[in-house]
Image 1: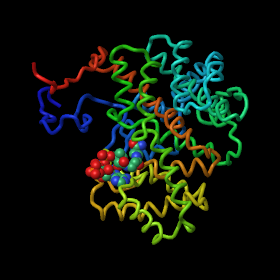
Image 2: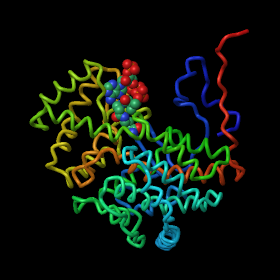
Image 3: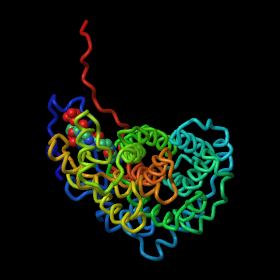
Image 4: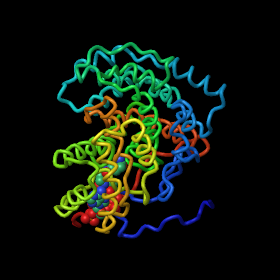
Length: 387
Ligand code: AMX
């Protein structure tokens, strides 16, 4: 692109619209296309969903898939950085149980930074990516009362070790596979989603990686952003109380039509950028037919996939009347042993920190020929009283 090319013209109507669609920078790691969905390093997400998570983590950091030797070396590097400071676990033990798991997650990252922060974004990237699975598993175990944290075995693999450390009572045999796919689908989502943008903006003031991720994860915790996955499962559970047969399209149609007529929201549908079914949801529907085919909440999600879109299209308001990633992920997690939806945003955050940390490394160490993006400082127009 030529330096003076006009990309976007800002008019008054664009003000106070949440920077929606304003180009503000470049991102080589991932992007979201309205019609074809999410890409990592130029690869469509559906082509990556069955890879090893470490391959995809490497791709997001280096923008190339690793060859066998590179993958082995990268895995070794992650293992070498995986020891979580015991002080983080001690801190978690002192947190109030009534605090939401996302608040615990923010506390964990903050304390990790106090023990492990080096001030070097690339070094801290490795520390945070390698150590977060242990911190998140400890949050589950301590806060849920499942027992003491289970010692880490990083040689098992990034997700395999996480599932091992979770030791979830009632975990299905498919939980590791599900968590691998879930992690890959949630690693990154372009440069401008709220949590990623916030994390990069904080880092632009040269706050370190850990502090930047605390801010990013606070942004993710909002119900219109990352906490939507928790709300989506609650929504499915609520509907299922009133509907006997989750495959009965007529009854589900009437229920959703009534709900929307009363001003309700059809959770798991719609997107700020996409204008087709989210390809991540497509992967999850296919996976559900294999790992949760009889689960009533999954069957309800499948019925909604059809009738929800029909109703939203008929109403004509939603720009994207199709399922998003959260339409299905919760029922797959609950069917496979992670039944408490309060933890779903933490699982999302564990994965999304990988992408955000990678984008922070790019903005701080590579962008603008290595100079880094300067401190973020948009302009707000004064509309208060004139004296
Ligand atoms: N149910 C009911 N109404 C919906 C709707 C839905 N699923 N999706 C959009 N609409 C309505 C909006 O409320 C808006 O109504 P208004 O004009 O009266 O204010 C109108 O359709 C136009 O909205 P839009 O431009 O299509 O959506 P948006 O970009 O403003 O918002 C989103 C996108 C995701 C917040 C919205 O679709 C929504 O609330 N969906 C349900 C919640 C959900 O599933 N969130 C998860 C999103 C995925 C993620 O980021 N994790």
